[in-house]
Amino acid sequence: MRITCPFCGERELGEFTYLGDAKPQRPAADAGEDAVYDYVYLRDNIAGVMSEHWYHGGGCRAWLKVTRNTLTHEISAVEPAAGAGAAKVGA
Amino acid sequence: MADFSWDIRSPLDRALVAGPYGAQGEAGVSLTEIRDFDLVQVMARRGKAGEMMKAATARFGVAAPETPKAIGTADATLIWSGPDQFLVLSKDGKHSIEALDSVFAGSASLSDQSHARALISVSGDKARAMLAKLSSIDLHPDVFGVGAAAATSMDHTSVTLWRGQDRADGQAVFDLLVFATFAASLWHTILDAAAEYGVTIGHSEDLA
Image 1 (cartoon, rainbow over the protein chains, first blue to last red):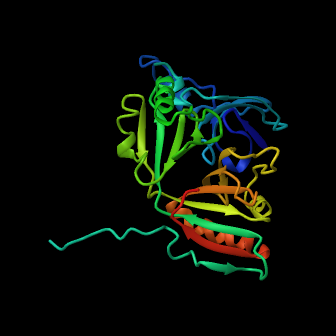
Image 2 (image 1 turned 180 degrees about the horizontal axis):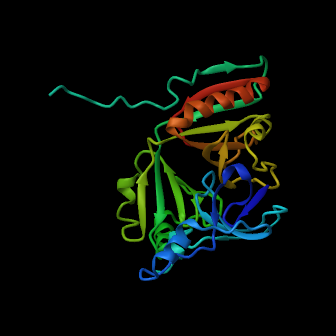
Image 3 (image 1 turned 90 degrees about the vertical axis):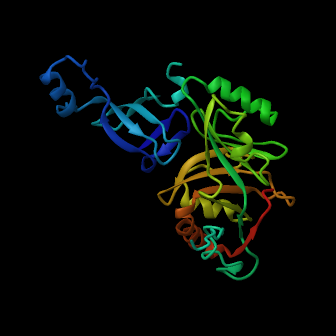
């Protein structure tokens, strides 16, 4: 499998580290225990198209959001995760 | 208190043995460790990438790389190392961290990497063939021309690889920055990969 880093171009899998599901969003501080439990522990095990976080640690060290089909490994989109290139996130 | 002073030496001081190595005859690969350089990591602060680029242009007379490239100036090389960050490679304190401190004040964070990396220059007829064993980057001249750069891995070790100016005899030069503590390990791997082509090994104080 190869991932096309938006900063570096197409690279082999060995340069990347997998984090996991990119969907969970940190709940608000007053969201309650169930929401926090869900955010911290519960994950969907998707057979199909999934949004994932990958880290290009063996290259430009940017975090990426990769849209990948877990059945076919087909990658349909790769974009910088929020925070990749600190200067690009707000002022 | 006893007097103490640091013994400054290259991370390849022990591993590097100058002279021929591997197959006999004309060497296919030439390895030169470059010593005694200044290397500064420049990384834009949040929302300040534009300011950092302006400061770099004012300082170096050329725009700093925003894509994987190495840009040579009269007395420095600016090497892309990731989004909104680059390395400044120079000599004799011209662009040391002390010299750049005021240039990027407020726009970028600086980190002195002068003694944190080893710099290996690879050339020779078989340089590409040897590097192809270690790297998944396409080094064909049509793809990886003079000034091309990559933040990548070789033998599971992060490296910054770029193509410098060709040698006087027209041969391509590949420059390689590797973490000091990984330098000896990568050096041995490179020697293994290069042995079949014959190697000539040396070190130099010149960036060229």
